[in-house]
Length: 245
Image 1 (cartoon, rainbow, N blue to C red):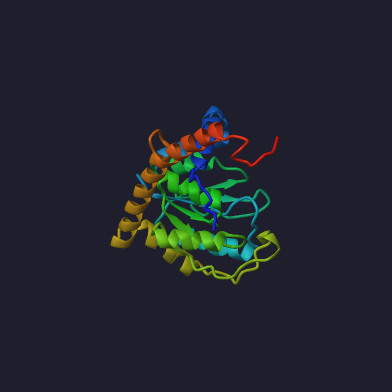
Image 2 (image 1 turned 90 degrees about the horizontal axis):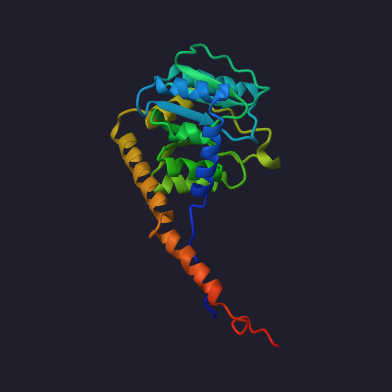
């Protein structure tokens, strides 16, 4: 059997994250950006839960209400990103912030006040959280998200909220069984409290962040593999491709 050479490169998102972060900083004068950072600056270190389920999935109003109840009942300050056309009542504006539409996710994840990320487990979001060293509350819905949740579980980087039903049709309209506020609150507090479990998860998240960043820095595994790939391309000849003159 012929061996196939493989160059392991990544996480590529670390480079794109740097570029996106610069764009966010350039636009930091925008009211939505500056208000988020201003609010985060007032919060305690690693105390805030960032809640975002991506740009595709749309929860029914009943599920949004359960999430709102869980966030209000927990002891955790939060930033929650929802769709522009979704109505969510925030009972205590000092405790949490609701963003409608686009949010500066990289800026939020990189802020020292953020200690957790409730996510749909989209691959980009998972990688961005790992690079930022932020542990996860996982809530997969469709596509490869349940596989990503399993990876997070195996790596010890988060806790499950308990979503178990795959949503068809691209997951745009979420039709999973309703997750009650008590279950959501339990997952939030498991990640965000000071228990041995949460401390272990946080330590693992920090460790994985260092590994991811080191891999793409000069001398790291990704750097070396990319250099080797470029060298192999430069040294490639027509005879290697079995091209006849």
